[in-house]
Image 1: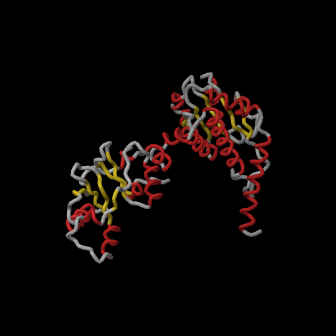
Image 2: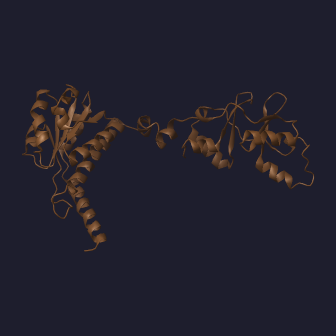
Image 3: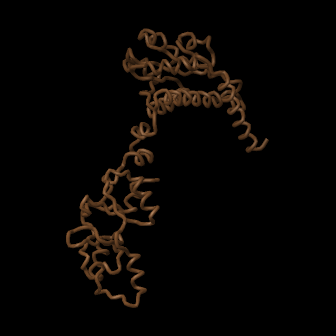
Length: 321
Protein backbone atom coordinates (compact mmCIF):
# COMPACT_ATOMS: atom_id res chain seq x y z
CA UNK A 1 0.00 0.00 0.00
CA UNK A 2 1.49 3.36 -1.04
CA UNK A 3 1.39 6.52 1.03
CA UNK A 4 -1.58 8.02 -0.82
CA UNK A 5 -3.60 4.88 -0.18
CA UNK A 6 -2.60 4.94 3.50
CA UNK A 7 -3.70 8.57 3.76
CA UNK A 8 -6.98 7.80 1.99
CA UNK A 9 -7.68 4.87 4.29
CA UNK A 10 -7.02 7.08 7.33
CA UNK A 11 -9.50 9.67 6.11
CA UNK A 12 -12.08 6.99 5.25
CA UNK A 13 -11.78 5.40 8.70
CA UNK A 14 -12.24 8.70 10.47
CA UNK A 15 -15.03 9.88 8.15
CA UNK A 16 -16.86 6.58 8.70
CA UNK A 17 -16.60 7.05 12.48
CA UNK A 18 -18.09 10.54 12.21
CA UNK A 19 -21.01 9.29 10.12
CA UNK A 20 -21.78 6.51 12.61
CA UNK A 21 -21.56 8.95 15.52
CA UNK A 22 -23.98 11.28 13.74
CA UNK A 23 -26.54 8.48 13.39
CA UNK A 24 -26.41 7.55 17.07
CA UNK A 25 -26.94 11.06 18.43
CA UNK A 26 -29.87 10.96 20.84
CA UNK A 27 -31.44 12.78 23.78
CA UNK A 28 -28.10 12.71 25.58
CA UNK A 29 -26.82 15.29 23.10
CA UNK A 30 -29.91 17.43 23.64
CA UNK A 31 -29.47 17.13 27.41
CA UNK A 32 -25.85 18.22 27.10
CA UNK A 33 -26.87 21.30 25.09
CA UNK A 34 -29.63 22.13 27.58
CA UNK A 35 -27.26 21.67 30.53
CA UNK A 36 -24.76 24.10 29.05
CA UNK A 37 -27.47 26.59 28.16
CA UNK A 38 -28.71 26.60 31.74
CA UNK A 39 -25.20 27.10 33.12
CA UNK A 40 -25.01 30.50 34.83
CA UNK A 41 -21.27 30.26 35.36
CA UNK A 42 -18.63 28.86 33.04
CA UNK A 43 -18.27 25.65 31.08
CA UNK A 44 -15.06 24.06 32.34
CA UNK A 45 -13.45 21.41 30.15
CA UNK A 46 -10.93 18.89 31.44
CA UNK A 47 -9.02 15.94 30.08
CA UNK A 48 -5.61 14.29 30.01
CA UNK A 49 -3.14 13.77 27.19
CA UNK A 50 -4.61 13.94 23.69
CA UNK A 51 -8.07 14.36 25.22
CA UNK A 52 -6.72 17.37 27.09
CA UNK A 53 -5.36 18.90 23.90
CA UNK A 54 -8.72 18.40 22.21
CA UNK A 55 -10.43 19.83 25.30
CA UNK A 56 -8.31 22.97 25.16
CA UNK A 57 -9.34 23.48 21.55
CA UNK A 58 -12.98 22.89 22.44
CA UNK A 59 -12.79 25.46 25.24
CA UNK A 60 -11.41 28.02 22.79
CA UNK A 61 -14.20 27.26 20.32
CA UNK A 62 -16.90 27.56 22.98
CA UNK A 63 -15.42 30.80 24.31
CA UNK A 64 -15.38 32.42 20.86
CA UNK A 65 -18.93 31.36 20.03
CA UNK A 66 -20.78 32.68 23.03
CA UNK A 67 -20.23 30.05 25.73
CA UNK A 68 -17.94 31.28 28.49
CA UNK A 69 -15.43 28.47 28.87
CA UNK A 70 -11.89 27.53 29.88
CA UNK A 71 -9.73 24.41 30.09
CA UNK A 72 -8.61 22.98 33.42
CA UNK A 73 -5.98 20.23 33.59
CA UNK A 74 -6.91 17.48 36.10
CA UNK A 75 -3.44 17.42 37.67
CA UNK A 76 -3.51 21.16 38.27
CA UNK A 77 -7.02 20.77 39.68
CA UNK A 78 -5.70 18.25 42.22
CA UNK A 79 -3.04 20.71 43.33
CA UNK A 80 -5.14 23.75 44.08
CA UNK A 81 -6.94 24.74 40.90
CA UNK A 82 -10.20 23.11 41.98
CA UNK A 83 -10.82 26.52 43.47
CA UNK A 84 -11.38 27.76 39.93
CA UNK A 85 -14.62 25.79 39.79
CA UNK A 86 -17.71 27.63 41.03
CA UNK A 87 -21.10 26.36 42.14
CA UNK A 88 -22.77 27.76 39.02
CA UNK A 89 -20.33 26.11 36.60
CA UNK A 90 -20.64 22.95 34.51
CA UNK A 91 -17.80 20.49 33.95
CA UNK A 92 -17.26 18.66 30.68
CA UNK A 93 -14.75 15.83 31.17
CA UNK A 94 -13.14 13.91 28.30
CA UNK A 95 -11.62 10.43 28.42
CA UNK A 96 -11.95 7.81 25.71
CA UNK A 97 -11.59 4.95 28.21
CA UNK A 98 -13.26 6.84 31.03
CA UNK A 99 -10.53 5.62 33.37
CA UNK A 100 -7.72 8.17 32.96
CA UNK A 101 -6.08 8.14 36.39
CA UNK A 102 -5.59 11.88 36.82
CA UNK A 103 -9.19 12.52 35.73
CA UNK A 104 -10.86 9.87 37.86
CA UNK A 105 -9.08 11.23 40.95
CA UNK A 106 -10.86 14.57 40.71
CA UNK A 107 -14.34 13.20 39.94
CA UNK A 108 -15.33 12.59 43.60
CA UNK A 109 -14.23 16.11 44.45
CA UNK A 110 -16.20 17.52 41.51
CA UNK A 111 -19.36 15.83 42.77
CA UNK A 112 -18.94 17.65 46.08
CA UNK A 113 -19.61 20.88 44.24
CA UNK A 114 -22.94 19.46 43.10
CA UNK A 115 -22.46 20.88 39.63
CA UNK A 116 -23.51 19.18 36.36
CA UNK A 117 -20.94 16.81 34.88
CA UNK A 118 -20.99 15.99 31.18
CA UNK A 119 -18.83 12.98 30.40
CA UNK A 120 -17.43 12.37 26.92
CA UNK A 121 -16.26 8.77 26.91
CA UNK A 122 -16.52 5.63 24.84
CA UNK A 123 -17.44 3.53 27.88
CA UNK A 124 -20.64 4.42 29.77
CA UNK A 125 -19.77 1.85 32.46
CA UNK A 126 -16.42 3.48 33.22
CA UNK A 127 -15.73 5.69 36.22
CA UNK A 128 -16.39 8.80 34.15
CA UNK A 129 -19.52 7.25 32.66
CA UNK A 130 -20.93 6.44 36.10
CA UNK A 131 -20.15 9.84 37.59
CA UNK A 132 -21.52 11.76 34.60
CA UNK A 133 -24.96 13.32 34.69
CA UNK A 134 -24.95 13.35 30.89
CA UNK A 135 -23.02 10.86 28.77
CA UNK A 136 -21.80 11.64 25.25
CA UNK A 137 -20.62 8.61 23.31
CA UNK A 138 -17.21 8.98 21.67
CA UNK A 139 -16.63 5.27 21.06
CA UNK A 140 -15.02 4.21 17.79
CA UNK A 141 -14.64 0.80 16.18
CA UNK A 142 -10.94 1.34 15.53
CA UNK A 143 -8.25 3.95 15.49
CA UNK A 144 -6.76 5.00 12.16
CA UNK A 145 -3.35 4.24 13.65
CA UNK A 146 -2.19 0.93 12.08
CA UNK A 147 -1.05 -0.24 15.51
CA UNK A 148 -4.41 0.66 17.01
CA UNK A 149 -2.80 2.51 19.90
CA UNK A 150 -2.35 6.18 18.94
CA UNK A 151 -5.52 8.26 19.48
CA UNK A 152 -6.54 9.26 15.96
CA UNK A 153 -10.12 8.41 15.08
CA UNK A 154 -11.21 8.90 18.69
CA UNK A 155 -9.69 12.38 18.98
CA UNK A 156 -11.16 13.40 15.61
CA UNK A 157 -14.60 12.30 16.77
CA UNK A 158 -14.22 14.06 20.11
CA UNK A 159 -13.26 17.32 18.46
CA UNK A 160 -16.08 17.04 15.94
CA UNK A 161 -18.62 16.35 18.69
CA UNK A 162 -17.35 19.41 20.53
CA UNK A 163 -17.90 21.43 17.36
CA UNK A 164 -21.41 20.01 17.09
CA UNK A 165 -22.16 21.18 20.63
CA UNK A 166 -20.76 24.64 19.90
CA UNK A 167 -22.79 25.01 16.71
CA UNK A 168 -25.98 23.80 18.39
CA UNK A 169 -25.43 26.32 21.20
CA UNK A 170 -24.84 29.09 18.68
CA UNK A 171 -28.15 28.30 17.03
CA UNK A 172 -30.04 28.20 20.33
CA UNK A 173 -28.56 31.53 21.41
CA UNK A 174 -29.12 33.20 18.05
CA UNK A 175 -25.39 33.89 17.87
CA UNK A 176 -24.60 36.09 14.85
CA UNK A 177 -21.44 36.92 12.96
CA UNK A 178 -21.46 40.32 14.67
CA UNK A 179 -21.26 38.50 18.01
CA UNK A 180 -18.40 36.37 16.73
CA UNK A 181 -16.58 39.43 15.48
CA UNK A 182 -16.94 41.12 18.87
CA UNK A 183 -14.80 38.32 20.31
CA UNK A 184 -12.30 38.68 17.43
CA UNK A 185 -11.82 42.44 16.98
CA UNK A 186 -8.33 41.89 15.57
CA UNK A 187 -9.44 39.29 13.04
CA UNK A 188 -10.52 39.96 9.47
CA UNK A 189 -14.21 39.58 10.36
CA UNK A 190 -13.85 41.91 13.33
CA UNK A 191 -12.21 44.53 11.15
CA UNK A 192 -14.89 44.11 8.51
CA UNK A 193 -17.74 44.58 10.97
CA UNK A 194 -16.36 47.14 13.39
CA UNK A 195 -13.66 49.35 11.84
CA UNK A 196 -15.19 52.52 10.45
CA UNK A 197 -14.02 55.23 8.08
CA UNK A 198 -13.46 57.62 10.98
CA UNK A 199 -10.96 55.14 12.45
CA UNK A 200 -8.76 55.18 9.36
CA UNK A 201 -9.27 58.48 7.57
CA UNK A 202 -6.51 61.05 7.48
CA UNK A 203 -7.31 64.46 8.92
CA UNK A 204 -3.91 66.18 9.03
CA UNK A 205 -1.47 67.47 6.38
CA UNK A 206 -4.05 66.93 3.64
CA UNK A 207 -3.08 67.82 0.03
CA UNK A 208 -5.56 70.69 -0.42
CA UNK A 209 -5.25 73.68 -2.76
CA UNK A 210 -7.47 76.51 -3.94
CA UNK A 211 -9.11 75.94 -7.33
CA UNK A 212 -7.19 78.91 -8.75
CA UNK A 213 -3.84 77.30 -7.90
CA UNK A 214 -1.59 76.93 -10.98
CA UNK A 215 -0.96 73.36 -12.05
CA UNK A 216 2.77 73.66 -11.35
CA UNK A 217 2.06 74.48 -7.69
CA UNK A 218 -0.59 71.79 -7.43
CA UNK A 219 1.94 69.22 -8.62
CA UNK A 220 4.28 70.23 -5.78
CA UNK A 221 1.43 69.79 -3.27
CA UNK A 222 0.63 66.43 -4.83
CA UNK A 223 4.24 65.30 -4.44
CA UNK A 224 4.46 66.48 -0.84
CA UNK A 225 1.16 64.78 0.02
CA UNK A 226 2.42 61.43 -1.32
CA UNK A 227 -1.11 60.34 -2.17
CA UNK A 228 -1.08 60.98 -5.90
CA UNK A 229 -3.90 63.50 -5.61
CA UNK A 230 -4.75 67.11 -4.77
CA UNK A 231 -8.11 68.23 -3.42
CA UNK A 232 -9.20 71.54 -4.98
CA UNK A 233 -11.62 73.83 -3.13
CA UNK A 234 -13.67 76.84 -4.16
CA UNK A 235 -13.49 80.24 -2.50
CA UNK A 236 -15.93 79.04 0.18
CA UNK A 237 -13.62 76.15 1.03
CA UNK A 238 -15.93 73.53 -0.47
CA UNK A 239 -14.66 70.56 -2.43
CA UNK A 240 -14.71 71.52 -6.10
CA UNK A 241 -12.48 69.03 -7.89
CA UNK A 242 -9.85 66.33 -7.52
CA UNK A 243 -6.61 66.35 -9.43
CA UNK A 244 -4.95 62.93 -9.61
CA UNK A 245 -1.70 61.76 -11.11
CA UNK A 246 -3.84 60.08 -13.77
CA UNK A 247 -5.41 63.42 -14.64
CA UNK A 248 -1.93 64.89 -14.89
CA UNK A 249 -0.74 62.18 -17.28
CA UNK A 250 -3.77 62.69 -19.50
CA UNK A 251 -3.22 66.45 -19.44
CA UNK A 252 0.31 65.98 -20.77
CA UNK A 253 -1.19 64.54 -23.94
CA UNK A 254 -3.09 67.76 -24.68
CA UNK A 255 -1.56 70.23 -27.14
CA UNK A 256 -2.78 73.15 -25.02
CA UNK A 257 -1.14 71.80 -21.86
CA UNK A 258 0.47 74.52 -19.78
CA UNK A 259 1.85 74.20 -16.25
CA UNK A 260 0.71 77.76 -15.59
CA UNK A 261 -2.92 76.94 -16.24
CA UNK A 262 -5.20 76.57 -13.19
CA UNK A 263 -5.03 73.02 -11.88
CA UNK A 264 -8.81 72.74 -11.94
CA UNK A 265 -8.68 72.95 -15.75
CA UNK A 266 -7.27 69.41 -15.79
CA UNK A 267 -8.96 68.03 -12.67
CA UNK A 268 -12.01 65.78 -12.28
CA UNK A 269 -15.03 67.93 -11.44
CA UNK A 270 -17.53 66.75 -8.81
CA UNK A 271 -15.41 63.85 -7.54
CA UNK A 272 -16.89 61.03 -5.49
CA UNK A 273 -17.21 62.05 -1.84
CA UNK A 274 -18.82 60.80 1.35
CA UNK A 275 -20.28 62.48 4.42
CA UNK A 276 -20.85 59.49 6.67
CA UNK A 277 -17.69 58.84 8.68
CA UNK A 278 -19.57 56.07 10.50
CA UNK A 279 -19.47 54.08 7.26
CA UNK A 280 -17.80 50.72 7.70
CA UNK A 281 -14.28 50.65 6.29
CA UNK A 282 -15.16 47.48 4.34
CA UNK A 283 -18.03 49.35 2.66
CA UNK A 284 -15.70 52.24 1.84
CA UNK A 285 -13.32 49.77 0.22
CA UNK A 286 -16.20 48.51 -1.90
CA UNK A 287 -16.99 52.07 -3.00
CA UNK A 288 -13.38 52.69 -3.97
CA UNK A 289 -13.06 49.43 -5.90
CA UNK A 290 -16.42 49.74 -7.66
CA UNK A 291 -15.61 53.29 -8.78
CA UNK A 292 -12.00 52.39 -9.61
CA UNK A 293 -10.64 55.23 -7.50
CA UNK A 294 -7.94 55.29 -4.86
CA UNK A 295 -9.00 58.20 -2.70
CA UNK A 296 -12.32 59.06 -1.07
CA UNK A 297 -12.78 62.59 0.30
CA UNK A 298 -14.85 62.95 3.49
CA UNK A 299 -16.83 66.17 3.74
CA UNK A 300 -19.26 67.81 6.14
CA UNK A 301 -22.80 68.93 5.31
CA UNK A 302 -21.40 72.09 3.72
CA UNK A 303 -19.07 70.07 1.48
CA UNK A 304 -15.99 71.21 3.36
CA UNK A 305 -13.24 68.62 3.59
CA UNK A 306 -12.83 66.95 6.98
CA UNK A 307 -10.61 64.06 5.90
CA UNK A 308 -9.61 61.63 3.22
CA UNK A 309 -9.49 57.86 3.00
CA UNK A 310 -6.92 56.26 0.71
CA UNK A 311 -7.19 52.68 -0.48
CA UNK A 312 -3.68 52.02 0.85
CA UNK A 313 -4.88 52.88 4.37
CA UNK A 314 -7.55 50.21 4.07
CA UNK A 315 -5.21 47.59 2.68
CA UNK A 316 -2.56 48.30 5.32
CA UNK A 317 -5.21 47.94 8.03
CA UNK A 318 -6.16 44.50 6.70
CA UNK A 319 -9.63 45.55 5.56
CA UNK A 320 -11.24 43.17 3.09
CA UNK A 321 -14.58 43.11 1.28
